[in-house]
Length: 172
Figure 1 (cartoon, rainbow, N blue to C red):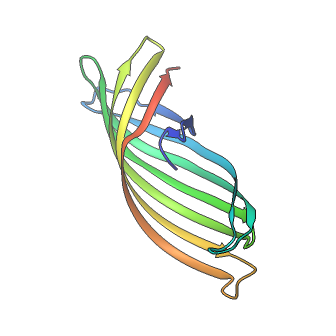
Figure 2 (tube, one colour; figure 1 turned 90 degrees about the vertical axis):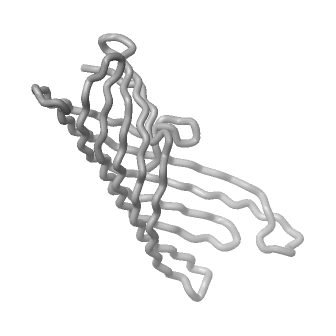
Figure 3 (cartoon, rainbow, N blue to C red; figure 1 turned 180 degrees about the horizontal axis):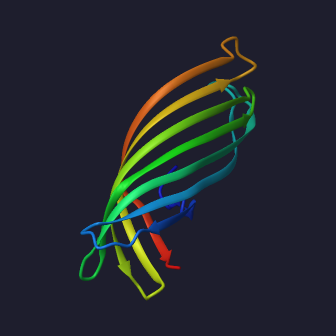
């Protein structure tokens, strides 16, 4: 659900299908998937003031699909493009410590973007995009050790990303 680099690693595969034409701005469709998995293990106190240490393990998984539309125009040394991506997604966080729990998050994000693509050769190019993401998230938290074991929350988030995506592209 982040841009191309998430913790320094590529996290999405994106296919762009161009529709050639004689228009000023030619259209293209974007399809892709994104996934990140992270596992952390840390040592710390269970509660503030406790004199003993516990190990906490957290597993985080994020999955999303990408569907988008863009318009582009060739310039002298680059291609200017703009459009919008829609990303339905799901993330899950599981923790094991003194108070284990599970958090599920359902996300829908719309990201208008603008970018420039620079040719490197006839088969390769690089591009950079800037985007402003609008996200709606519905979260569900379950912790069996508490009396308020299940809670739900809804959040809205606006995020400006520069770069939203930084890519190396191969042209078929």
